[in-house]
Length: 387
Ligand code: PEP
Ligand code: MN
Image 1 (cartoon, rainbow, N blue to C red):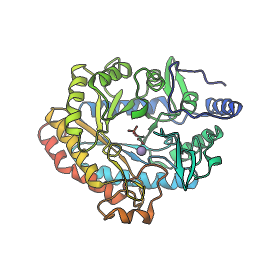
Image 2 (image 1 turned 60 degrees about the vertical axis):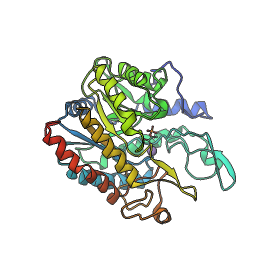
Image 3 (image 1 turned 135 degrees about the vertical axis):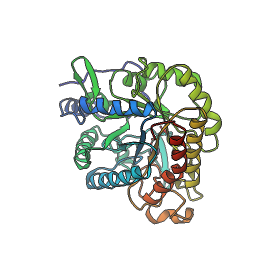
Image 4 (image 1 turned 30 degrees about the vertical axis):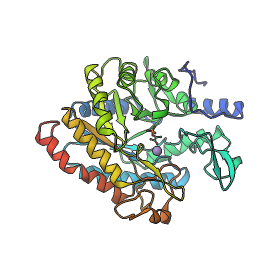
């Protein structure tokens, strides 16, 4: 079986695969592999997200920035399944839809094509579906066979998860995603995941990633960063949710703790005026990244809770339902973000194991969710949501 091209526009952040035969072979294998998700489950999740759009449920989405392969993938999935389950019990103001950043989070957009490690310049790590994280130039060469390992890892991860867990990842690597489209009747579903999202770097309304999402029936999500204008966001809504269908489109705002209160209201008002029943979610991680004096990427818990609280208060002031929280978390006792049981930047070195961005440990994630507890009670009280 060969995988037909489903997009015509230019795709950014794609690897330069050095071996085109290997790429063709990998795409063919993915195209004939069993689907990872079913149309029925995808429809059930879309209905659950329609409940969120109506203010009757709340999403908790979380997991690694970049997922590992091998035994670490399965062990990590069990740990994240457990912590997401525990965190969801801390949310009392609405029924919770739990969605993992799991079973496919293997490709990363990078701001720079190269990086310098120990004085040597090499291509950046782009996620395990593309190249290796080891600081050795040869490992950084894209290898299309890695997409097959990614697929088998995703299958193994799905087998570890309990049935209540939905999965999501950034639909970045189109040579992986495209061959995993399946059809039911005349409807196309992306069978690599339940909920694909596109990131801040690939949300160009005239780009391939937006075009790709327009061709599938899954619920879809899009990150919204500080540079987004109301016009751009409305144009994205028109492309990604032309039917104004509840549950189809989730917008994940990641605006930064200092800017969220000013940047968010015009976006929310514009989307509301355009009549799109989107889910508004908060990613308080990606616009709050800092570099320590020793060059480590980190995030401070107070910035994360600050953005999360400001997001929920802002939506509430606008009379809109804050639909959920998107976190990078490890499910393990890592020391990658500062706050709670990681007192300062000096404590980061003890257990910093992330393949990409800094993740919350369990105690830190619990602090973030708890910071919303009072707000949640207030939302329920005001009749925003079922309560
Ligand atoms: C991510 O979710 O890991 C990511 C790269 O996010 P964003 O597109 O919001 O920067
Ligand atoms: Mn990340």
